[in-house]
Image (cartoon, rainbow, N blue to C red; front, side, top):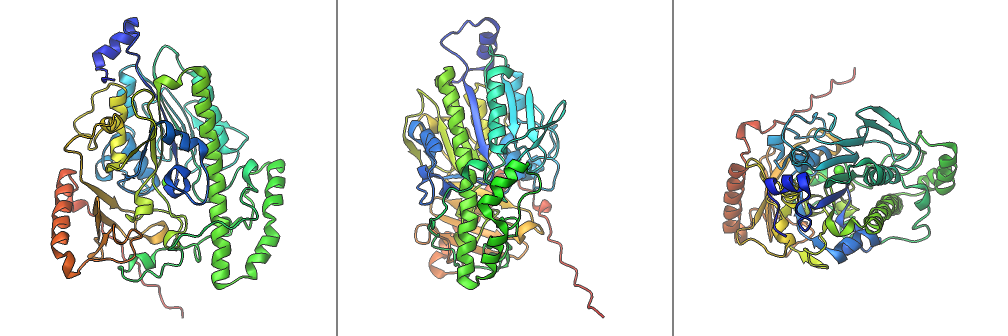
Length: 505
Ligand code: CA
């Protein structure tokens, strides 16, 4: 289908003169911290996601989808603006998003699209560019979420993943103007820490042991210091509430009774206290991963509810459905939970797209794409010209099975949040199809990985003579990308040194 121009679209709205050139609707379903390792279409050995898999069967799955900065708020800002963090201003989670800047929903809205944002927003400032918005406050709780709206706070009883879908369905059924095309963002809090499952899934995976990843007991050798100085290990950094040794404070009496029946917090605390060493690690790993996957079960079911509605309402054939997450995640790989790193598990993110009649069902894509491309893609799907200052590339040609000859061969990544939660040092780097070069710039230290020989990234080959010429090439490519994306040298943040503690008298 040829993209609509602005004028054709405007005319179509004005007089319905193009019955065969109906503008597309877009349903963007987005989650927070969903590891591709926890999606069966990506080969999960730990869970099944039948509804997300439907998108793979009926559309395209992207095996090399990445982010530019693997953390929540920055990723959302990149998606809204089509610009890297240093240009959209959202370098870290702590910054308030500048909602006055250009974003794709504003551009869609100008051409007559109806835009809606429901669920997790996480950008501190109120959403801009939406006809309808109802969003969680900050991170938002897993149960009974108060939600911000332009008319004040709504308090809703229920499990947040279900609630976000309920509000999305209600807007699709009753809230929108049915004469206009829509772009709706339905964004989950799940499966963000601390992984509180819904009432239906509290006992899923009981009585079974889930497989452990190969690198659960990583010793962090053959790399620079950052991999060993982080604070995100399953063995050492999970809290009592992560491990469900106490119940959340905001449950209704009925919710609390189910919760306590499932976790029996006092007994579990006792059970944990008896364990040590590797036995304790095994226990924590099972506890953590099961809760994480239980949260995914709700996300998957709710995606099913949306897909069923599109089918029943007749909207499915003219609606592009996209599923993605704000970044990837560690499900025990390298011994970790959390994200932030340019290592594959958190650098990558799930991306699946169903475009009926255009994208070949069951197709698999291995090109290098990034969340930097989403805004440009959304605009092209909706027939709106992309502004020149956006930095990504529309993936619409890939969805049509036509890869442009000059498609990118490398990706730029930049993480800024240090000092910060989980103590991951600032770094930037370049990834090509087969290699990755990472620079921990405040430490002036490099790592390099041969992704074919060492897919788990356990042995940095930086400084090895046989990689000397490749290292030179990657450094030059990194320089090229930093210039292309206008990364300012003088905005490199300087890490604050911790003040030495005063000795106790
Ligand atoms: Ca996130």
